[in-house]
Amino acid sequence: MDTVIDSQDEQVPLATLPKTGDSSPAPYYLIGAFALTAGFISLRKQKQQRK
Image (cartoon, rainbow, N blue to C red; front, side, top):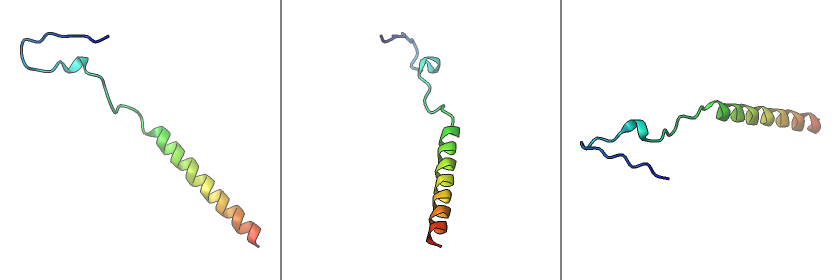
């Protein structure tokens, strides 16, 4: 359902606009750290198996 706001002047009512891009970057940092850790562990295991 759309809300219609009648504005006499030509300004946009900023309080009624949806917020975008307010998410936290922490989950992306955690995923990246996990991927790096998994990569280093797999490299170590490959080096140990070659010996």
